[in-house]
Amino acid sequence: MGIDILMVYESKFIKSKKIFQLLSGPLMVVVVGILLHYFLSDTSSLISIKETDLVTIPVAKTTAEFISFFHLPNWSFITNKDVWITAITLALVASLETLLGLEAVDKLDPLQRFSPPNRELVAQGAGNIVSGMLGGLPLTSVIVRSSANVNAGAKTKMSAIFHGILIFVCVAFLPGLLNLIPKAALAAILIFTGYKLAKISIFKDYYKRGWEQFMPFIITLAAIVFTDLLKGVLIGIAVGIFYIIRSNFRTAIFMTNNDNQFLIRLRKDISFFSKPKLKLIFENMPENADVIIDLTKAEFIDKDIIDTINEFITNASEKNIQVTVNKSMYNELHKLVDKNLFNADDAAH
Image: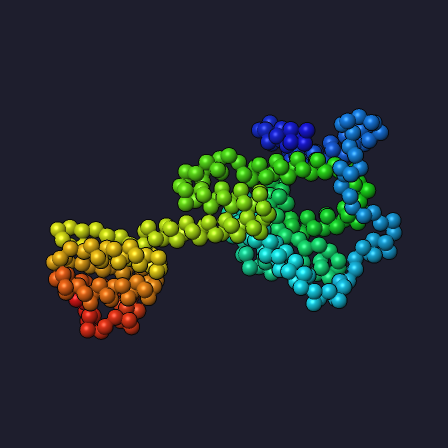
């Protein structure tokens, strides 16, 4: 029922009415869930909601009891390696989730603003330190709460501050009411929000971009579902690096020829992965060829590549091949290649 309510709220008719902007879909799902629990709690029906299916928050009868929920950490465990392993794992997971959520929220922002990731991580770290000192759990930025703010029309950081204040007020003064909320209602909100963030159109869009974009996307998604967030993201990063190297390997070296004149252009970052391909090109170069090695597009050239170029220039005379190298990356080449092979002009032979 919760998902049905949220789907109705997505209709144009509901969105056009101002009253429904005040009574948002998620709020209505929570209200309906509480009402269903209230009217069905005294029945023995199969549709009745059990106490174990409700939100459970500690209820303090006095101010002193509420303050007792906060406690200082036990410093005797500071040397426990398991504590440090858990802390590092939580820090990595929270940081990754925050960065991913931050990028997603920036895309949802109607004003298309950019959120500084370093500032977000510092704020999260400071908040988690304070939370831990008071006996609280570590928190992280999540797309669900952030998207709820965006959908509610929030435009500034004050929305996050008010969000925290409202949570504190509700936990402190309305815990009994919160304990009436069925978990199924909250699950419906999370599922529907996740669906809105991962529509079929997004999968189609990444598929149209090609396998280099689609495969890291779908593998990361599957890895997160079948393992956990940290492992899934790490697997996704590994897959992404593989495709980056693969793409760079394919596009790093460009060659064209015309009437025994060859242009070999090195582009982007030329790593040692491109060495076998470059060596194959040099080995298959015909006799009496005129070869131009263009380095103007290369931002970085690995020393193995420079050595390969050096060897080719040194042995070019055996096939009567004339080699020209332009000025780009000249200083870097000049350190490793025999100075007799280069002059101060535009080319070297």
